[in-house]
Each structure stands twice: as C-alpha cells, then as structure tokens.
Image 1 (tube, rainbow, N blue to C red):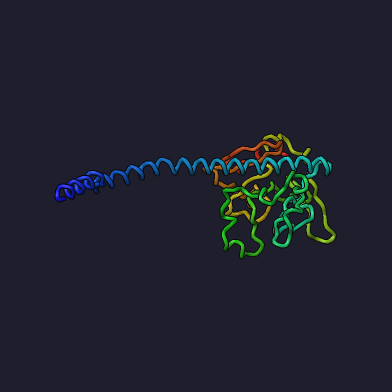
Image 2: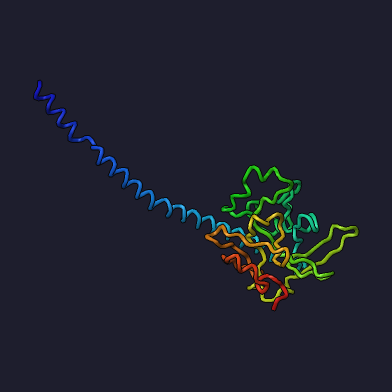
Length: 243
C-alpha cells in the first residue's frame, strides 16, 4: 500500500505545473495578447472608417439628386445661430426636429439618421453632451462661407431668419474644379456645433483627426478622401469660386 501511495504522489508531482512554468505560460499569453489586440483594434478602426466613408458617399449621392430636382441649388446650411433653422436645411438636427425630414433625407435610399454619423465619433454619445442646449449629435457638416455683403460665397444656400426672409441661393454649377472642393467634412468637435462648416477666417473651423490623424471628406464631384486637417486651411480646397 505504501508503494502505491508513493507512486501516486510521484505521478501527481509529474503532471503539476511548477511556479516557473506557470510564469512562463502567463508571459507567453501576455506577449500574444500584446501582438493580437493592436491588430484587432486596427482592423476594427479600419472597418469603422470604411463605414464612415460609405455614409458620406451615400449622402454625396443624395446631394447630387437634390441638385437635379432643385435646379442645381444646394440645400440650406443648417446654421445654429446666424441663420437659424430653415425648412431647406440639408440636415434637421435640432432637438425638436426630425432628422428624417432633412432636405437630403428624401434623396438617400433607405435613409437612417445614423448616416449623418461617423461610427468613430464617440463624443456625440457622451451623456453630458445631451444635456446641453441643442447639441449637434452628428458628425458631418456642409461647407458654407460667410456672406460677403449680399454675395453668397457658397457652398450652401443661405436663408435669413429675418422677416421677410431673404434667400441667397448657391448653385453647384458655380463650383469651379468640383473634384477639388470640399463639400461634406468631418469637423473637429472643438468647433462643431451645427451642420455648417465655415472654413474662412476669422471663423475657421478645423477638420477632425479621428482617422489616424485625418478626416474623411466628400468632394463636390462625389469622391471621398482622407485628408490632414491642414488641407482644410487652404481656400483652394473649399472656396467654390476659387479657380
């Protein structure tokens, strides 16, 4: 019996992990996790960027169809303060307005409000932001320069909130080099407060950096590109009438 017990003890000792073996195993798992997790996160980030690009592409097609129906006009700029909410706003974003009734929504197949959002724009889902007065809960904004007297520099059409209301329309046919002009951009949250991107001084609104330091942008001709924020500081890339 004693020999049997000794044999069992020896067998147990032979199959058990030593402390050193356990530490080595944990170290290997840690190294593998360190190699795998960044790759997984990078793949997830790339997938979200692709979804963002697809959202902008669908909206870009919507703009093209809107132009066809409205004699080449751009919709309204969706301003928060200067011009206020207008029926023609490309995006209805205010708390008491239904995004599904946005000017562009009717021209996007299978439209859902999430198309106005980049999946990587996590700031819009912060609980404290929803408590502010009319926060902008979307990711994209439309190029809209300030007025120069009674001249609308574009790209959005502008409608005043004065009575009687004054219209300052802008046509896509007035855009020079449409393949080089920014239309829909991902604007940095530091300035993003409505659906209007103002690229001219002194109200310059910087582009976002959520895609590895870049922003996804849609050009007037419909193509999408990822650009560095400095791209948005050059008037040649955004001023519609810049030749």
